[in-house]
Length: 98
Image (tube, rainbow, N blue to C red):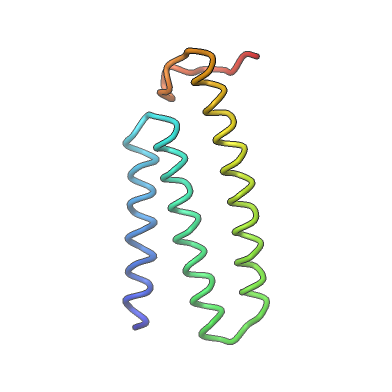
């Protein structure tokens, strides 16, 4: 069971990293970033459950809260780019103008 959990964490992190590096659309890059955060969170929760550490579980809750805030800010920026009529690809965007 131990190796299976770490293998899933590694696989999720690798998929997220490949989405972040290989794709240029902003929404797909945000999805890859969220996959990486969730893979790390699974590792933190599993490590905390092995040791019975409550601080690790509270850190996992903090990670979830930060990831939710990051998703809201990222999605609002992506929505603003779509509304402005610009291309949603990251290499086309150099700066955001209001």
